[in-house]
Image (cartoon, rainbow, N blue to C red; front, side, top):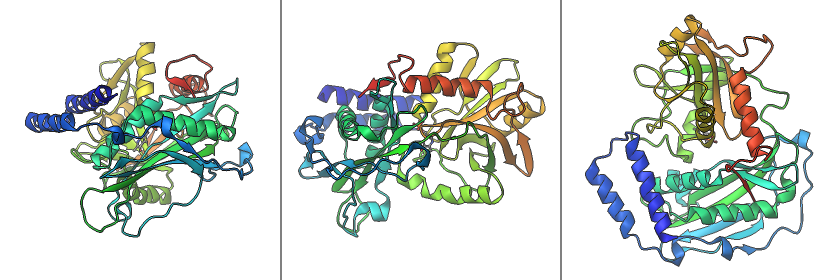
Length: 410
Ligand SMILES: *Cc1c(COP(=O)(O)O)cnc(C)c1O
């Protein structure tokens, strides 16, 4: 376990370096030395085998599928485990969902010591619960946590804890395709002093909500406003970590976009207006490039992009299909504008756990409207053929209709 956890930490560092984050070799080795010198004791992680369960015996009434509003209904129970610098992790508990009590000086409330995850549990035709690539989420939470100097943990142990919570709240997973139980692991700093420094206390908790499909009546393609006066992320920043501090500042540009009649904003970066993310989704462009090749493009993991599980899965599927070029590369607004003008833009979509894919129909940019094609064969269609196919394939894997190693039985 110790070796494995050190290896995977080293792996993460190597990967980050490989994608071109400017980090001098000396500081890289210094960091590795520090990681290697960390002694792992029993309290360096919590253990799923030590969960204490005092589940809710006052069960709530289930909400009918049609009445579910994303993120508003919570299940009967939650998982919680606390950490202190001097004694390490405590034992995880599964207990009734409820309010948490924090000291007003808690570091999460002042300096945003907060990171989180978003994943889902699905029910298959046989009524069994399934998770989708949960190891990706728990590893990402650990990376976010380490970025904030919040405590590390064994990611396999967290995955097992989440499975136990899912088993406890199994009745909350809706069984209809498209419906699922959204899982929100959260890690906060709870140190009780006002001072900008590492938190000496932390709390990890996991809550769950039953959710319906993002698009209840089929796809609804979105219209985006390209944000040119603000940026979401910058080189060396934290845009590649799922930390709370990244999200509140993104609401204002989003509201401005909505005020001007768009659904969402499109985040750009740099003087050449590189596309980075669609609201809080990763971004994909399907086009015929200037060389005449059909190409699926998504921005690279260069520190400006949140490394989405859906993004990675779509890249994996598309590469496996091997029917067109698949690229992780920079793509600018001028390339989009030119492709659109020359009739080479085929489809665009955002990706994320909540929606899987979100087709894009329009971008407002520099006072112009860029019309993005949906389905050339069907003027009423709200999604292009590739967007649909990726969505269908991912859903089939998530609901266990296609046997696939990404879908993990709970
Ligand atoms: C969570 C998130 C995504 C999508 O990641 P998934 O793992 O696919 O859900 C994309 N962009 C941002 C900014 C995010 O926070």
